[in-house]
Length: 262
Length: 64
Image 1: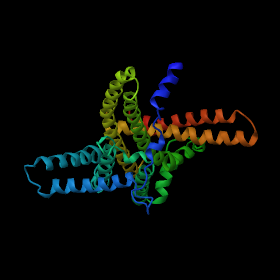
Image 2: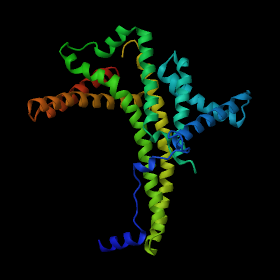
Image 3: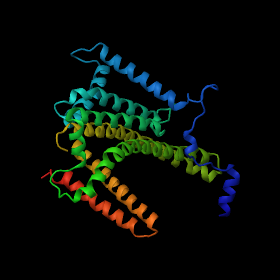
Image 4: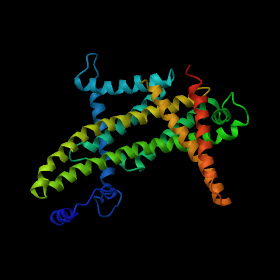
């Protein structure tokens, strides 16, 4: 305990990373909205546009490396996500799914890009907006395809169930379609990005702080940094996986809305 | 794991959550109004059972 006090006094007190590290001041004094996450979103749109315009501009039978890279991402979303899940009507939804996947992926990976180093999706409003889009789209498609009465009836009343069970099951179905689905979609992405960024902050800032401590602590510091680097690679996996899951679930919800019987 | 299995896993989580939240919420509200202490537990159990039944109907029944 005493040594802990000594350490504190010497190191000037370590401030653990918290949710405050996610709030950025505005770049301009006269507008409070233009902060780092907003800048990153604009940057991502710019980068994605430039990359895919370059990749598709000189499309050839024998693709260049750039065209190959662009086409493999597109092919992955089109074949492995859209075609496998949605079925024969999948082409209509490829533009949305592709945009969604690339946008989330780019913004997630910003979390480990040197100098940028902030995953935009760790601000909950961004996943909320994307989830609202998905929510609106899959309900709209379901209503367009099946008519509003049949669509709602299919959601609320499972066929082949004794009538009394509807009292139990119908509220759960309604809650799932209207609340749980969009909410979990947004929060899963947000929480993964938030926690991942916080974890990296703990190890990197902690390592940095240890480096300023006494000689014993300096020796521990490299381990903290090594862990931080290891976790960065792990974070890359999580970032890709979350972009994939968001797109996958969107495709599944669309497929569910298109199917005649759930 | 095929994409559809992935999706089944996530929709199971969704149903379980909805069941717990809705019937647990009803139980909590009854406890709150009637000043009792057992409706919350009963609601949560009811919600989980109903969710599992629903999951079996939606997913288990079709994948023979």
